[in-house]
Length: 347
Image 1 (cartoon, helix red, strand yellow):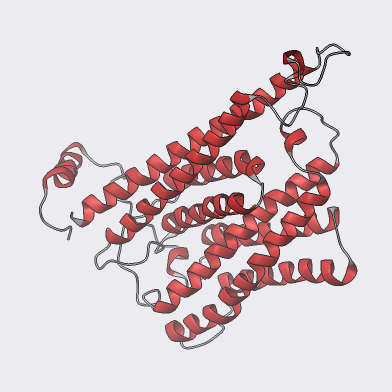
Image 2 (image 1 turned 135 degrees about the vertical axis):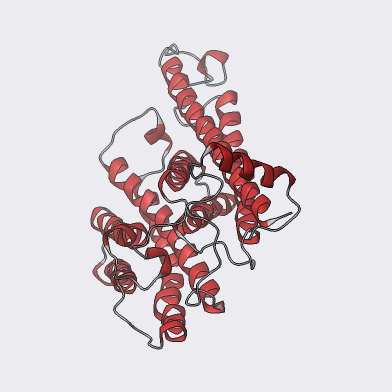
């Protein structure tokens, strides 16, 4: 396959993954709707009905019926398939470059890599602990992020600049993306804690979500996992890479500063829980502040700062991908011909 064919294959893979995530989201929403319907039917059960009778089969607002259970399992299976397709699309994106490289050379690639890790952590965590109820939020987040990547973050597949062409880039970014996925899921759990602690709902989604204490504990576990990885990315591999690329371990680059701010916020979160006994609302709010600084560093710096030395944050106009850019009729026809019939690598 040519480089351009790999690029098209990658785009189609991301689109296919987004469709699967969307179908998984619909399955999860159908599950929630079924739970609500089952609960309403259960409210009509006679007082003297036996627990095993057919008329009392839908009394449990969180247990649901057979269709509800099938919808939930279908959502998880579709999410797992989407993660697999997503991974293939990432690999194809790296193979589309000449020379081949890691698939995180611009903001579009960082976004599809970050959303992949968020979904992967959710699937792997579901195999160990029962957090399938987080599926609607995770799939909605991933679908929205992929849509944003296609609409506003697309860049052409270009070789890595010298500053990014380093083995330390792989180590630094892998650890940063893993911790970003863990922090994002932890933030979703913290947000759910704030909503659940103020809700007395006995039907719908919140009825299925565990008690606030459980949410608080799960959020802490996600942050406790992500923080050492983020420390490794920000305070060890990042400075080593900066010294190799720019000759100094610390350059007061906006990305570096905000990465350190994020580290301080999460360090305060874990320290407060360990020493001051912070639990519940205060800890959840601090976790949300942390994820806000994290995502501002990830995306906001690229739009509000032109002083960053990171190449994907440069203020120069990005070269649009040949797949998605708006082209004239002749140029578009030529590109289609290259995709389907060319035997030569893209220049």
